[in-house]
Amino acid sequence: MLLVSDIWHYIKHFKLKLFRFFRKKRGAPSPEKALTLVSVHIPKTAGTSFRKSLKTAYGEEEVVRLDINLKNRRARLNEEEYEEDFLPNGIQVVHGHFSPAVILEQFPETSGVDFITWVRHPVERVISNYFYLEKRLKEELDEAGKGLNILSKMQRSLLEYARDEINRNRQHKFLEGMLLEDFKFVGVQEHYTDDLAELGLRLGWKEVKETAVNITAREKPAVSDETRAEIARLNERDMALYEQALHLRSRRKEKP
Image (cartoon, rainbow, N blue to C red):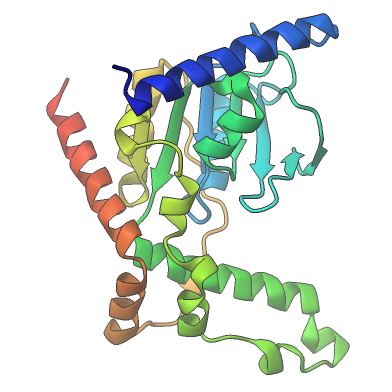
């Protein structure tokens, strides 16, 4: 008797073989290339900094940024619209905003490739995301320079932002389609330096370079304990996911 997981495995395998057949028929580049790593970048989990480390390890041209909208499934490659149904030939690493479920569906050649990701304490991630977007909005509007007063009229508070369903349990949504245990490596941002060094060792990087990008910690106002508690409550799935990531990290540290 076949289990649901077995059926899903056979379906994915069949889709990949079918994909390769038609790809060769139309003369597209062979998928048998050096794609070795898929890095899922959850917003505000040191992803931009990590991309720079990936480029140091693999090369500037061998790492591409791929973003796939979780709703409309539209893809952007290196920040430009991308409508092909296969990834560029010759790349080693795909890094960006997408879920495993979406990238495996749209680009079947990622099946069987190692997936990695980083997670962050959900409360800190939500707060960081909010103030980062607020900062970007202020920069785009340039109210002081244009003599405008739009931001004060349209701006939402931190809790209003956090209560919006689209902003709740974002880490859980981005990791849809794969269990944490199925990732080759799950880094924890609160242990970024140590985990980056460990990842480099595990993947055989010749150089591990840490670069800090998009740091907003020094600019964030104080957030009350009551607000933090509500953000935690609004992100129960992410809180459980984060605890699981810490548990996996602890188990990983026990092994040489």
